[in-house]
Amino acid sequence: MVDHINNKSWEKLEQAREEFSHELSKNIHMYGISQSVGRLYGTVLFAEEPMTLDEMSQSIGMSKTSMSTGIRTLLEANMVDRAWQKGVRKDLYQSEDDWYKSFSTVFVKRWRNSVDNNLKAVEQHCSTLESLSNFEDESLQNAVQNDLIKMEHARNYYSWLNEVIHLFESGEIYNIIPKKE
Image (cartoon, rainbow, N blue to C red; front, side, top):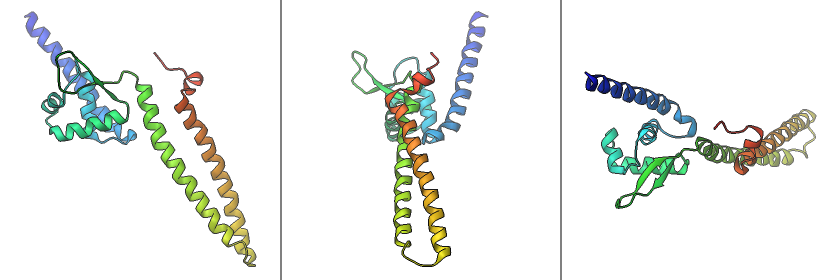
């Protein structure tokens, strides 16, 4: 009877882990990560020991090549780390315990790229506006001036966003909003 209850408890735990992993994988796109890599992350997250690519592949039924690509994505996002165990020659991976670090890595990478691209677009637009400043058409000049004002607002916004990004890069964000340990 005890074994039956124990087995039911383990099944319940596994079901709860699967449900959490499923929900996590559905929303991981916010990190720029695919749902299948999200399932891989859930597998590594709940593993009792660091896992090899073969073990991951067996666990979720994806090819070893897909596992390798997925793990690389998770490593770049600081969501998993390489691990070492005596006597194990294959690469081992485990989940990163510091979810704040993972978020910061992804946030900085995605927002830095967006800010840089948008600032380039602002400068390009301003360059075009300057080339139009020699025309005598008053309504054109008013439109150019309105656009220049909008571009100044855009520069200010992206400058502010760069400061926010710096808070994450430097870790100063945790002085403002401490981690929940």
